[in-house]
Amino acid sequence: MGRKAIQFYTSSLAERVYMQSIIEEGIKTALKQDEFSLYYQPVVDMQTQHVVSVEALLRWPGNGMGPDRFIHVAEATGLIGRLGEWVFGQACEQHSAWIRGGLPAIPIAVNVSPVQFRKKNFASHLQEAIHAHCIASKGVQIELTETAVMEDIDHAITVLNELRSMGIKILLDDFGTGYSSLSYLSRLPLDKIKVDKSFVHRIQHDKASRAIIEAIIALGHTLNLEIVAEGIESDSTLQYLRYHGCHQAQGYHVCRPITGNQFAAWYREYTSLPH
Ligand code: C2E
Ligand code: MG
Ligand code: MG
Ligand code: MG
Image (cartoon, rainbow, N blue to C red; front, side):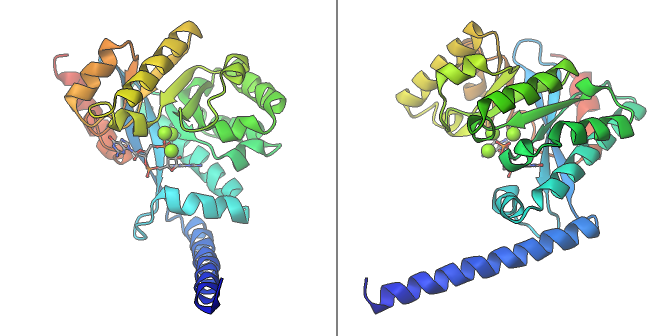
């Protein structure tokens, strides 16, 4: 491709490898020094306005890098196992702390990476965290993407059935952006599907996105799945989704991801308002 092109490629590759090793060291240190934290974003029922769950979102304060940037490094370097276990433990701890602080038992949905999900001891690690913090299993839910289940669907079904038998709800995240194969969707033991925010953001401008969302909602109704839309940033988007039968809402319009203490305050304020 000519000398310049080769030089560019080499240097950018070297840069990527270098960046990755910096991030890898950073994650190791952050785990050791307990630098990570979880933020929480509520999901509310479109009809009753009740808070049905909160999603835990990983943050790396002081670093500023979002999970979209460092999770894949954790996956590539094998650190996702430890990081994922830290997230489980922290979520269980927060669930228990809110209850001790007088909040009802609001389930916390934890994002699980495909690499983490495919590990043999995934379900038992989750169970251990739940037992260690003396919380009910239904206090935890998991959010998976299609990538996590597609590679070995029979194994996925076995693990998901085991989790569901404990009372843990299973949610398929970012729905519509992956394979979205309808045949496997009906085979998987799921409770919820989450419409990806990329469709939600295009509701106002794009007829095709509206058609996809309406089809996903219809599919959810037929398969008896709860449907939640993420990334709702305006009241008109929320009204549109409610009108079309979407069950639950999440997004900046409802509440941004906030710390555990901020969530407790937000919840008290939110539930004191007339709905
Ligand atoms: P996700 O699970 O699909 O999470 C939704 C993302 O949308 C979050 O980004 C959230 O902060 C953001 N969001 C929420 N409401 C709105 C909105 O109204 N508008 C817009 N534009 N964005 C909104 P975040 O926190 O940066 O997380 C990105 C992704 O990183 C997550 O996507 C998830 O795949 C992954 N992730 C986050 N925490 C964890 C974790 O603990 N473990 C694993 N394995 N992955 C995680
Ligand atoms: Mg999620
Ligand atoms: Mg999502
Ligand atoms: Mg995502």
